[in-house]
Image 1 (cartoon, rainbow, N blue to C red):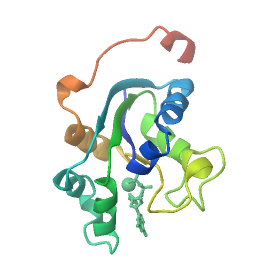
Image 2 (image 1 turned 120 degrees about the horizontal axis):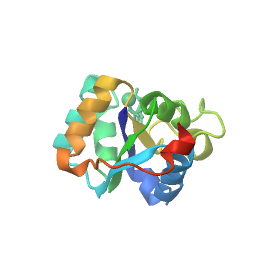
Image 3 (image 1 turned 60 degrees about the vertical axis):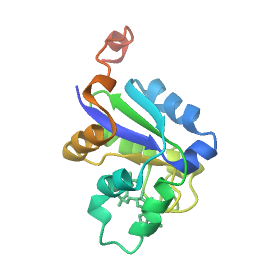
Length: 148
Ligand code: GTP
Ligand code: MG
């Protein structure tokens, strides 16, 4: 089954949104397979955001994501990568629709609450950056027969 990497960014942690964000993905029917609260090192932040290295906001992005604890999660389910991106809303909260996480809680592109992998390749890469194999739990849930 498909997996994705989602992370409540330091602004989301400070604004007490971890519970609400977990609730949304649980209620949708996705399965939590890994989670941890962590302070991201500059080295990990630079690896995670390597694709943005040349962007003018790269330094700001790394400073922000390392500025306090973030909540890293692995979620599993059919089409979880694309669906999670829809549930997060557009990168810039000004464009994110109400009902999405960024649409409901975000105000600026720099502090947009949540990160989510944008493709199968980036999900694989990001999950392996943030989690050891043994930290991803392989289990079944009884609700699956009512979801699929
Ligand atoms: P992520 O899930 O966080 O990767 O967001 P995204 O995939 O919707 O956007 P993208 O990968 O293009 O950008 C990564 C992150 O960089 C965004 O989530 C923003 O937090 C940040 N970012 C993008 N554009 C700007 C900008 O112009 N200024 C600042 N400060 N941050 C930006
Ligand atoms: Mg991205």
